Image (cartoon, rainbow, N blue to C red; front, top):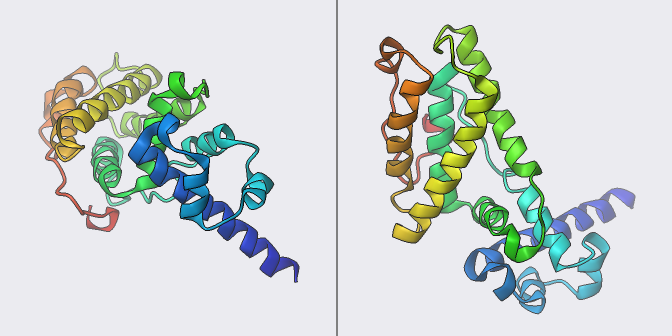
Length: 211
């Protein structure tokens, strides 16, 4: 009996996360009413409070869980893997509402009063891991700093996706990410390495398996 009960509880939690993500993505934090979220999820207020203390707590969970449904490409290694990850994220941001809403809430924390930097540290760690592998493969310039560049990359990606959201609803995000990398790569990699990399934008709908 315990397992079915736990499974139902987990299903309810994810239903709330997805409903909240849809509402936050469409209306922002302030415009997403709790009753609308509950209606989308098909659950009662009591069920929500079993999992989340408040709308703010629910928003924080969307931010923290934004990457839960992502499956990064694994075909390549080093810098090409990092480029593929960034293009994959650009495509998934177009199609995955949990990821998209989590990113929006992370950017708009001053409006939600969340003030939690941990998700940015997490993304920097993912990027730094690939940069360390790039160093091991001899792809980086001697003066390149993996930790510092990973933080710059998170900031550059964040700003780029905001501009894409405003300009085209993120339809041009893969192209903008490609341009971003063309500008950033000379700061960390020698020309002969850059010449071997594919920085072209991914088409909408491409999956990690197609990398």
